[in-house]
Amino acid sequence: MRYEQISSLEAFLSQVETRLLAPEQRVSVSFPPTATSPWDGDALAVANKSLLAKVSGSANLYAIFTAACGETEHSLRYLGKTTKKLARQRITNHLFRKNEKTGSKLAQVIAHACDGGAVKIAWVKVHPESLRNYLEEELILRHPEADWNRENRAKIKASVGASVVS
View 1 (cartoon, rainbow, N blue to C red):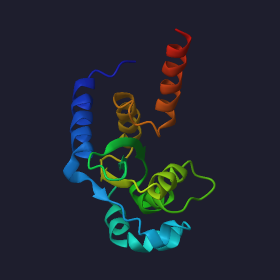
View 2: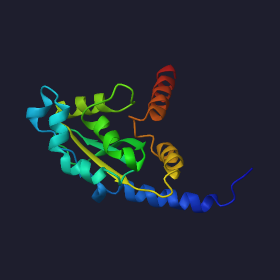
View 3: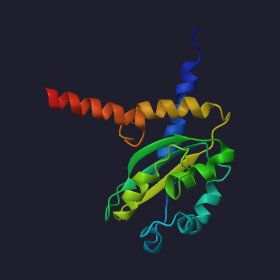
View 4: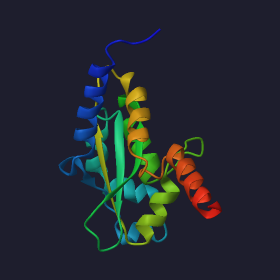
């Protein structure tokens, strides 16, 4: 079977992409030095209580951006999905403390923050919520620069390997 209204779905994807990636949607994550060395996920969650409250119940698609120490330009690193109900916990796992069962980006965030880099996140709430799966997959395909997504890491490794062989 073929879905015939794909153009309306693609138009919605483009609207979501524009909103999610807009610089004015990004919120800075706070990494006070006293909580990063040694890493104290609980203290970091407290320092970002306001951010986590905003995410709670209002995010089912999100993006993580980073900037090197002293830089103002942020790069897209990761695109993810969650349910509105679990948004706060998912963002906490990515940014501050990880449950060992999740595939969060905490190790990358720790390395980046401890290097003095900046992290921002952005999020949107889509309805119906089940569309988040399609939207995340398509956004990852559109944004190969999101190199913390395993789908894009595999592509980057393949292209580097191909250029080394050439």
